[in-house]
Amino acid sequence: MDDSDLVRAAQGGDRAAFGLLYERYGAMVHGLLLARVRWEEVDDLLQDVFLSALERLPSLRDAGAFGGWLAAIARNRATDYHRRKAATGSDGAEQAESRGNGPSPEALAALEAIQRLPAAYRETLTLRLVEGMTGPEIAAQTGLTPRSVRVNLHRGMKKLREQLEVKRGKQ
Image (cartoon, rainbow, N blue to C red; front, side, top):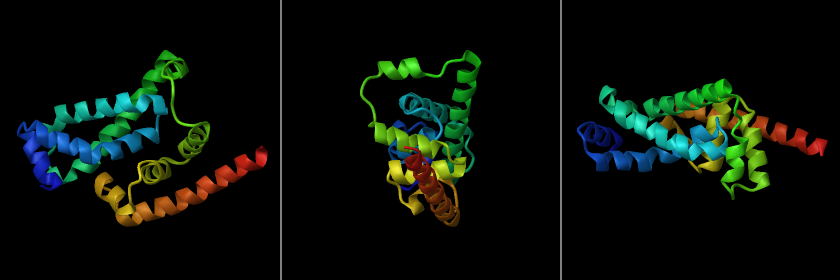
């Protein structure tokens, strides 16, 4: 069953179809969120994105646009998270400490370097390097063109290397 068929089935109330969409698009949403928020917050926001998508699914007119539509929900959810954080003055550090084991210091340093890049590069690099998606998979799931994904990956890797070399030079 292709994605459009799954979307239409889920719009008709088929929870199993929506579960399959979650399986297919979970890594993409995880990567988009990881490119924008602290890693400790990603799992909760991932659930929020899919709950929001489930509630709004009847309003999606083009079943073939599901990936781009879901990516927009994820980006908006990350933006809302930052707005709330700014309004409350919380940086999330206290919650991060209470969660225990997480990524290695090297992985966090690499993620922080990626998060300092422009959004287009952040997203495609996170989807490629962290989530392990191929360029065509990134294009298909996010609604970007294959060419723009290739360009973003190429330019993003160049900028990431530059950042890491500068950081290495300061140590």
